[in-house]
Image 1: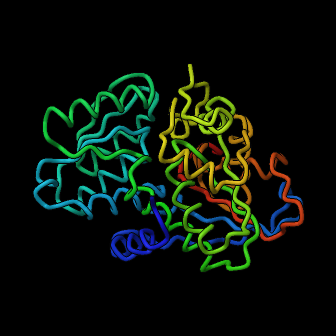
Image 2: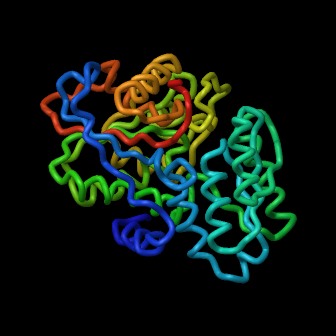
Length: 311
């Protein structure tokens, strides 16, 4: 189990190495938020360009030095790989990242700049993950899961602590879902502090991984992925994440690639925020009315990843 104390310890551990990102009031904006008092948690401004640095740094700094010396291995759609490459640089550990062919080439280039070795393996994250696990087992390097490790989830949960500190009367929080690491950590933090806060997750229509798993009551592996939002597109989540989501997340809604693209354009036009598709997913769900805010007026959405989808 992961609790509030784990997330608070994670915050202390990672504080020297990550940014406390701003919570930006979206007012005044022209349209698209239905009169809501919308606030944007700008994890697109986090080091490496996403929240993933939080979980990766927390996991790596919790490891024994002798394990770090053997190296770090993971699979990633791009953002977790960048976070782990950064964490490896912080800890002085060699890092190898397995990427699927649908990962953006510019992220692979950034991985090299952080000193990581890049290995292309498979068409989607799940394929790369199998290759990364095998490589770690063969070499003795530490495998770091992108969303299903307690230390990773605790690190991501620090986003939730910051949001509630900056906006204690928040009524509705919207979070994009890939494998479920971010929403698992954020849900653990905010529901411990504000049990009545409504928490809504957002997935692509072409990758409803947690949606289908929640419906089935078990981890479901999707037969195929049909979204360009590759950082929100594992074919399966994990029992750890599913258990947290079923217990703490109030609702999951779906948005299309076109709706995420339009939300990313809106973020750029209105606020000069450059977001990738995943980074715009939470805003897309609000702008399209997928989420009925009900009586809630104080709303926050996490802009979880940087990119140029709206440009």
